[in-house]
Length: 359
Ligand code: 2RA
Image 1 (cartoon, protein in one colour):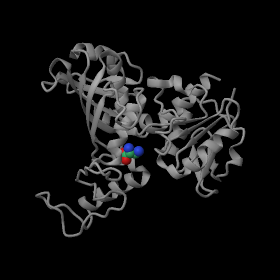
Image 2 (cartoon, protein in one colour):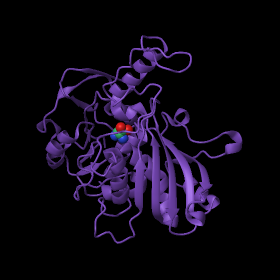
Image 3 (cartoon, helix red, strand yellow):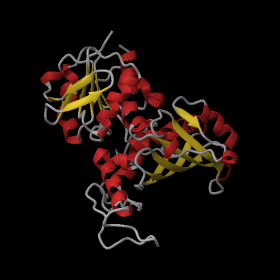
């Protein structure tokens, strides 16, 4: 049966991708999706539904809907997500892309291939941080097969993580460095005028920035801690490390770095497993996992890259190798996934599909 679908924040980068994924997957939308923007009256071009116009949001306007995607702020989610949930149809679901509700006990944090069963009977479901969602696609099957004791993640995150404005700033910065006033000298030094930056803490063009989201008291950034907290929650442990930890919780540490790519996040991951693991056994487990694509043939220069994973639903995994740090329990690998798809819009639509499968 066609479903009443609404998207809040439809004009942002994630909102636009949600519309695209609904179209591509033939999601059964009744009529056309209702688009809410911060202001009403903005036109949004779609392939399937022609030009749609945003409406100003009110909870009242979402009453009786079957699926409401939130691609808005954390404050918005705190204020409205549960209230919207209460007014939905009997099996209706709110899928929130913000980080505000991810650690709340009454809100499951879901990647459908990992813990899709949690979609049953819940009105509000949180989408994980893109970096975590992409990492979990490889970590979860390895956790099931070999157990995980330690996980060390280093990320290479695209400008798209900072939304459409972040992507625009990178493109403008590159143009300015190559052709404009802030030109690059032939020896790679910058000209006298700095590249402008407002979305990132420093210019991103021709740079890497080891700073995503706010610094915390422990010296990590919030982005880095999200990987720790969300991995713990999605592997079935309390999200925040505490004195009641049993020792079974994988220890997760992340360094999150913004790089000047436009789209798709990459991650180098080192793990220590509970049981011994071989490269062959890991490959077998990873190649069987839905949503994950083995891209691992160094003789053919085949490994995950943003250029091959951009626009694709599958997360790529490769460069799988034994590491000497953890010996026969140690593995290193590299993954790459489209941040706007698996890390946001695709995951949100898969969550909605899963939730509706229990209706
Ligand atoms: C980033 N993970 O890449 C964030 C977006 N949620 O900035």
